[in-house]
Length: 211
Length: 211
DNA sequence: TATTCCTTGTGATAAATTTCACAAATCCTG
DNA sequence: CAGGATTTGTGAAATTTATCACAAGGAATA
Ligand SMILES: NC(=O)c1ccc[n+]([C@@H]2O[C@H](COP(=O)([O-])OP(=O)(O)OC[C@H]3O[C@@H](n4cnc5c(N)ncnc54)[C@H](O)[C@@H]3O)[C@@H](O)[C@H]2O)c1
Ligand SMILES: NC(=O)c1ccc[n+]([C@@H]2O[C@H](COP(=O)([O-])OP(=O)(O)OC[C@H]3O[C@@H](n4cnc5c(N)ncnc54)[C@H](O)[C@@H]3O)[C@@H](O)[C@H]2O)c1
Image (cartoon, rainbow over all chains, first blue to last red; front, side, top):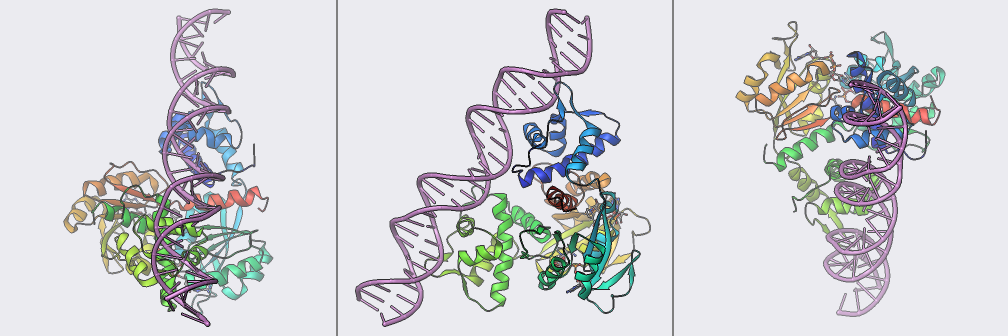
């Protein structure tokens, strides 16, 4: 159950295992081998075992892993057994898509406060939430004790919004704006590099002369 | 100008350098050092140089890199100097957000065909495009010679849609559904692991007992 | 219970990626 | 034009990550 130094990649894969386990569980199976898990995730089975062993010994030789127990364990390791209140900054194209996404709620992420700086939008109701003025981010999230923020505003405004979140006591930020946010080390930022992904695709196709 | 074996990470960073170079260029500077590029990207300067040298020698000792030339070069290396027609599968929350996103067009990705399987949606117009029946994906993209597809449908339907894209001759897929698509090796898939990112954030906060 | 089969956990090995550190190239100043 | 200041490109070293391969544990069967 080492807390030592777990590769970022392993953590990301944990999330993938959890999703696959959910599918296997729903299909009615009770055990699963690292080989099968690896196959479904497109990985090497030793890697699956290594990843899991970072957190403890959950398997039984000759049998594999108990699906529901492993699922529950990973959920707990990732802190996904509790509801996590979230603030959304920027109720535009992407922000609204995230707001309507059921998958977040299913995973325990509850969007509780939403902000924008557009006078037309502030005060309106979206998905049962009143859009608040961006200037009140700090006060509001402090009041509601929200510790996770999602940034979906243009990159020119992202750093300033991040600062307000941090001032309000935010602990983690999921950032969709294409910019490296500067934050104190006690704050964790995870970037969703959406455009980069598309550009990577372009590169690979271009390299193979497919465009 | 080696085509040898370029790390995936380097390719993703290329995209980041390009974005930063754009900013520096717009700010009116003409040259930039690997040190500054590294600082802005949050990386080591040797890494920046190594990344760039994969593709050629663009720098001048004592001076650094010529901003606009490097920007243009990276754009070309990534195949982003040409318009790339794209098909979008799934005009739901996320699909509509992507459809309205200007950043794609700016990068040369032009969404030309959009598909859904919802009878209510098929035939309607969205952003100037008629939503087409998902059953016609193969025919349509073959006709229009579209080589990149974006999948924004539930994961249960994603593999079947991917198959139709492949049948229509697609070369690359940007996949937002949380599932590993099985595709022939001549097709490139890039996954946007959105939920995984949020779950990673949960893990890091949880580990530090911040939730 | 003995035997066979399967699968874990893990040390060793390999591969990939990052960082260091410095010679060589070029710029800039006086 | 000399000399000092920079900054590149790059081998070598260090670090990180992935894979191999196998002993040992446990299940299943007879
Ligand atoms: N939409 C996409 O598909 C997509 C894809 C990749 C990246 N992104 C990135 O995500 C971010 C949002 O994209 P979008 O398409 O939703 O943009 P958008 O313009 O549709 O929405 C941005 C919203 O943020 C609000 N806003 C602007 N400044 C603000 C501020 N200072 N405080 C609070 N709210 C503010 C605007 O009023 C608007 O409602 C951008 O950084 C974009 O680059 C979006
Ligand atoms: N919206 C988000 O913020 C978000 C976040 C993370 C991941 N995702 C993933 O992105 C995908 C789309 O999410 P969403 O929120 O837009 O869902 P959504 O339900 O809003 O939209 C899905 C759309 O796909 C259409 N569709 C369903 N089956 C189809 C088929 N076989 N062919 C063509 N169209 C079909 C539906 O009619 C609907 O219009 C999902 O896989 C989801 O898990 C979404």
